[in-house]
Length: 401
Image (tube, rainbow, N blue to C red; front, side, top):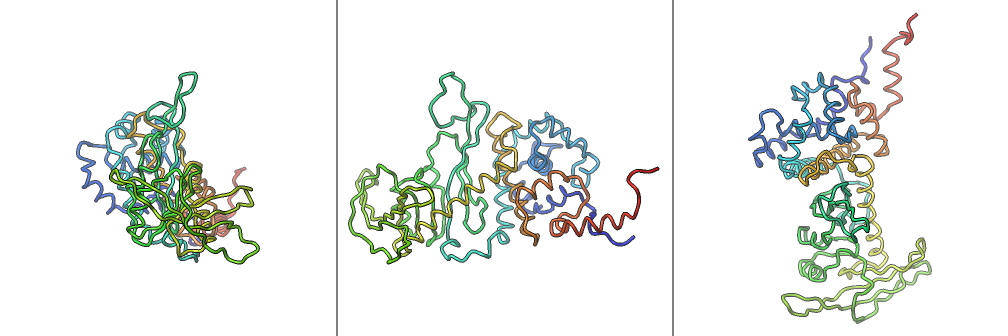
């Protein structure tokens, strides 16, 4: 029988786990002493269990524990002697701090971020651009307050808000903070720490003039939408380029007031007005960048849509509708492990040459988690690998006479 590269010595799930750097895990475990009070369910077993939950699409503790039990004979090869029980998983999610999984994600992100940037990006600004936004994950129980008016029937759901910053070239979260859904977005801005010369793009929900002034002093640029009720004074008009197809209808320098240490201060900014033909509406941008062309300012803001695609990718491919616990720590652990799964699948995608839709690639892994198939080879050329597999199996009939 000839050599077959279709089959592999490890199941697909184990191959995905191979991208989890054990050095990162060891450092996090030492920092948090996360195995100190656990005899059986250590940090590695907890991580593997929750990644299995994310990648398999398990929606309950029973589904998760049963799925792992069925995979019992393969767990030994990845360092798990016995499959965890429902009560063990529940206790781990409740008691082991979610910060452990946060640091695992951030450690793995730092380890793999060098392969994430898109080499096709040409605009120099994009390489220095950070995108900020938030998304609310609804909860079936009123664990955390959610924004909006109370329902008339007295019933309410909770919501946890994920505040996220991504680098435009990497399109993976490099900073994440969780708050209750009712918390205002602009409170996240104080956690941002970006290099001088960077650009930050966000929607108008993050409006904070004091923060804008501090960024201007530090040489950090921002681009956002201007609030409809903003009070400002126009100082000077900036000449528009002589272009018949120009969508920019106004470009001007303005000043507006903000309060710092109980004193009124004046901030000089740029106001760019654009006519969006696709939406048939006027869009007004606010920025402290005076060097870029007005069309570039509008183009940078449009690039903000990439973070919306990230949220869509996360919510569509990993289960964030059903949570295994009803406390904030368990919910945060499940979200962090979904983000780790997202990161690992992006690393897999960067290691293959063939273009795959992210959802199709995740579906393949989900359906064949326990299959002994060489994941990278199969994703690169599934037709070739499948033909070779059939050839090596010979002419054996599937239906014996």
